[in-house]
Length: 282
Image (cartoon, rainbow, N blue to C red):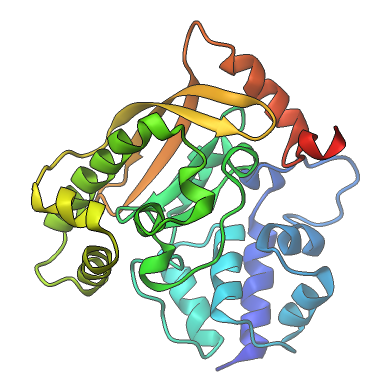
């Protein structure tokens, strides 16, 4: 562990990142070559005072904070690993919610500001999402183990998940998720612990999953059409598009309005509303 070097390393990476690289407006009279401390703190979900302590070498960040810093500063996988070692933390597994997101994925995500978009793993663990996705789906809830997977949440009755979609569409989504999961498991090494743990727990907890898994359907989800229920705006009709990473372990999903519906206007309104709930004002 070398917290002094950690602070210097983080500071050097901050100087390298331009505001436009992370979706921020530069504005006039900037006195630093890259990001300001408060901007990194905001991107990482930390207080400015705490981030300043990290740069001073006076704080040992948690694994969760290290992951957030690596994403905020667009670190490469080698830089991310170096950051963990300087902090005296064990390197996180390749999967799960702490998985490294390639800077190119972040770059694409930043450029999709006009539509909801997020990056997840092949096991549907949410890694990062943009502001419109926050407004449409709600913020990512930190979780570890099988419970971090959207598929786990879907089949174990997490109320945050199924209420996003009309009940008539649930069977379609269940089948799509299971078929995509089987394709993902097939691409992984035999006996992969992360996927085996997820499947084993779902087979025990969900009769619906166990039934669909036994059918052995396989289909990589590349595109889909969905109806998403927003508490204030009602039903949004969207095309769901996917871009897989080279190793197929991560994917970028973005949502475009279906032609002939009022979803384009609703997305424009959603960009203004953000996470406000208009029902509370009625």
